[in-house]
Image 1 (cartoon, each protein chain N blue to C red):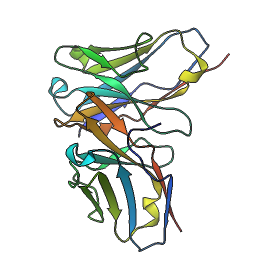
Image 2: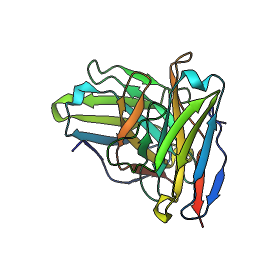
Image 3: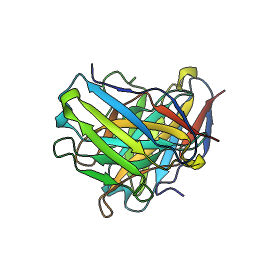
Length: 119
Length: 108
């Protein structure tokens, strides 16, 4: 079945970096874009942007430029989210999600990766 | 703030119909999707393209979209439907995905 499996939880100090992975299976990886969504503790869903899995071209939503980088390794059907210069306010669950349709919706979602930033 | 407006909470008795709304300017031109998020779990798609239900989603979930408001309806609500529900749309004018703020559905 179509599945996205993310890497495990991370505890980091402010100023550090983190890389979250999202491994796809059950479909042709390059057939669908992958999106990233953030959810701070107790808060709603916030779209971070997406990456074209054919070209590797990322598009970032407002508020997610500079410290956030999307990348791919198509040889292992995996997308990555790299966050640098971590701040305490980056503490959140980060989800990858497969994009469907031209006015897109997301299905499925990864299980989420908790990134906790604390001194 | 969120581009799509949802009520923060909705309560429903078991077996009754729950209705969750999602409003925005020109939403009827964008097509809406809905996600269910149970506590401690990742979101699950329950409705896409306003009215379509993915395989595996119970028939009691249905959607509609007209006059700037998308609606998720859960008929014969069950205790297992208690969750947060989020609407989502594609804003073609700004080329961005937008989410509603989420609605906590309580079944009591």
